[in-house]
Length: 123
Image (cartoon, rainbow, N blue to C red; front, side):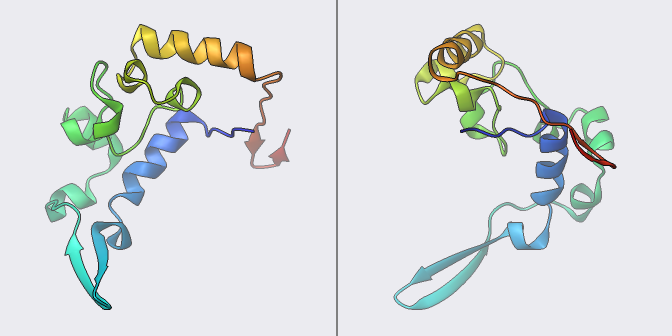
C-alpha cells in the first residue's frame, strides 16, 4: 500500500522543514563520539524567505525544474514512487517517468482511492 500527499502541500512542507534548525545540523557518531556539522549553509535571508517569494525570485533551490535529476533535489517527485529506481525514473517530468509509473500502476495496483481531509474531517 502506498500513500502520497497532496503534491503542493508536500513541497510547501518540505521547503519549510529543510529550513528548520534540527534539519540543518548533521549528527555523526564516530568512535563513540558525536560530531555536529551543517548539512548546507544558507544565509539568514534565505532561511527566512517565504516559499512564494523564493519561487518568484526564480531561485534554483526552491523551484521545480523539468529535466533535472530527481536525486539531486531535496524532495522527490511522487510519480517516481510508482516508477521505481531505473535511470528513466530519475528525470523530473520526463515522458519515460510518467509512462513507467502508469504501467506499474496498471500492473500492480488494483485500486486507487482518494481521501480528502479538510477542516471538517476526511471524506
